[in-house]
Image 1 (tube, one colour):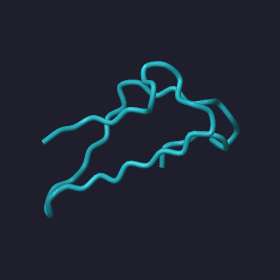
Image 2 (cartoon, rainbow, N blue to C red; image 1 turned 45 degrees about the vertical axis):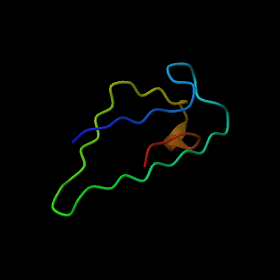
Image 3 (tube, rainbow, N blue to C red; image 1 turned 180 degrees about the vertical axis):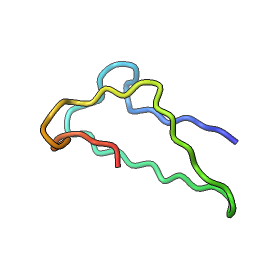
Length: 53
């Protein structure tokens, strides 16, 4: 099993004030592994403006 998610307008910058959420589900007994091939977020102390959580 595999899949992809990307932000709107990727590979260009994502829109200002974007709040995006993906709900990932797998069958019972499976796990999800996230691998980021490219992650470019706005730098700020403690990831105040942008983050992945």
